[in-house]
Image 1 (cartoon, helix red, strand yellow):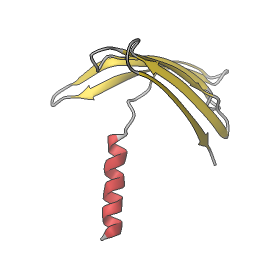
Image 2 (cartoon, rainbow, N blue to C red):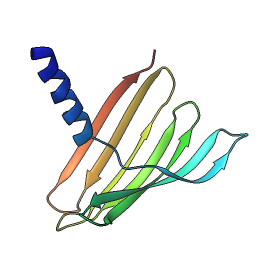
Image 3 (cartoon, rainbow, N blue to C red):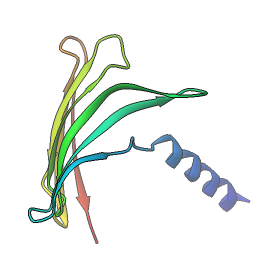
Image 4 (cartoon, rainbow, N blue to C red):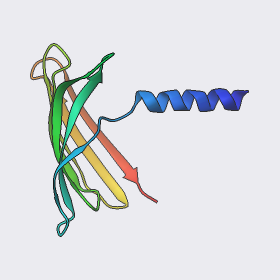
Length: 112
């Protein structure tokens, strides 16, 4: 019974953290680089609404950079960041609404 509850909780948590889709704008096969746009979407009963977007570059080895805007709050938030790529990848980013809300994020991704 506990295992079933744990699986159910994990499935619900994964659905809540789903990422918006990255739509490729351009792909250079020789360089292994894709330029994408990632709209910030919120579903309604019969449609989807966009509240800003992120534009980024993603390389085949995982390196990348992005810049974006989120207009879902009273003041728009702006963000910029990047990732180093490889088997041990470091990422960092900042976001701000230009007034009250400022944030810094950092992470490490280990691929195996």
